[in-house]
Length: 389
Image 1 (tube, helix red, strand yellow):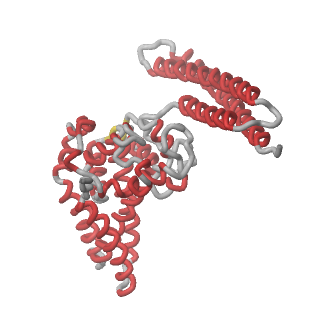
Image 2 (cartoon, one colour):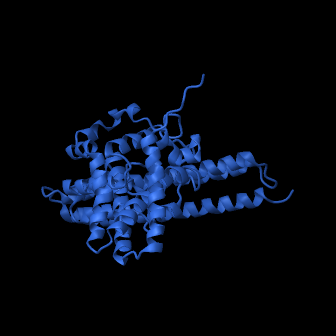
Image 3 (cartoon, one colour):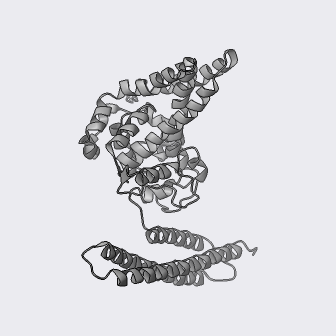
């Protein structure tokens, strides 16, 4: 006889009731009453702050330790992330660390291979809290603030998630609006923002940094997940405090961490070097092209010639990447030497730093030229591959 599947009724009822109360309650409130403008403004701000509590707090600070911060910031993030009702920091982090360690396997708590909706929300319905093993978050258990939040999570979540918006709404005579819109409806939105990363960002997008994993980069998802949509990059380089590495990438969590660092409230921001990122991108592009070459019979040129061309370009790019790596190490050495007050060679170091920066810039320009040739090769391959026989 088949064993009965476990259902977490606490999670199930909460995930059913909050949308009913939040959506239907807000609609009825708008139909039969007038919602204060201040309520909508507060709801928007509170949604953003609590959502960033998850991304900057639970995710990048605690789960991955991509940066460190002042105790006041830590407390602030723990309090406001509690308002999202996504479990304590310990619970969230142990699940997330297991997701990264066992991604796309049966041990992945929200594996996409078990289905889109399982990864999105189903795993929470099947979640058995007693089976959680907190051994992978032993470092976090040493943090008194994290322990406090874990112990008193339910009252903290109710206080921050429902009582606080209700009380604030009451200040301008809209307590019910504060409870329904800035409380229940906000929770529903932030729930599905987090869930979308586990489902959409493992299904729809581009595998920019790793072909072996299902994690993808999805710029559109980043717009409403506080910058978490660049998921292929995050899975390849989880210790980077950034998800969106380019200047134009929408990643407000990255900007918040930078702001905290500028204010002296965050430090030890971890960042993957540019040459390592480019090296990984080149490797993925090469694998993609080789797979296409191997899969198709070309009409005009034999496959061997295309493979030789890719190998020549790859070798050239590798040499440039190695040169950049050596130059950046040398630059760091010179920079530290210049900052050392005991070093008498301040002026020579300054001139050497300038020369080294110039060489690094030239090397990156050389690498961009190789990447341009690579894109041309890909376009030529596609044209030849699709020519009619």
